[in-house]
Image: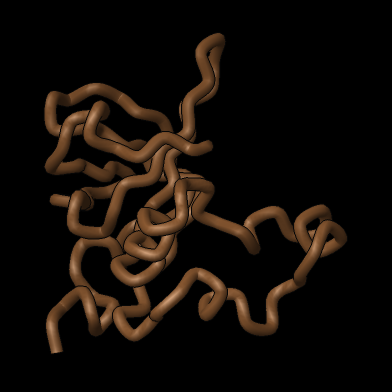
Length: 123
């Protein structure tokens, strides 16, 4: 079993509230969600069994439909795992970084192995 499949590796050390920096050293914001991967997941729906459904479910638990990216990309993120990064301020942005992009975790800092433009923006 690989480290990613076992849920260990760098992403297992990531926690909400940590600062995230891309490969160029740019401050991307903070981690607002960590999802460890499920390599056996076949579909996005398979991840949602037992989760709230329909409009009421989305209102009660908006995270139940994460990640907010197109279908095949969402399925890949659910299988591999991801962190969701939010940058507030005047120009608010939210991105998803796949588990493999987490290169180091040190204290309250997450470093990515990719530049900001390689991350998936929330839709």
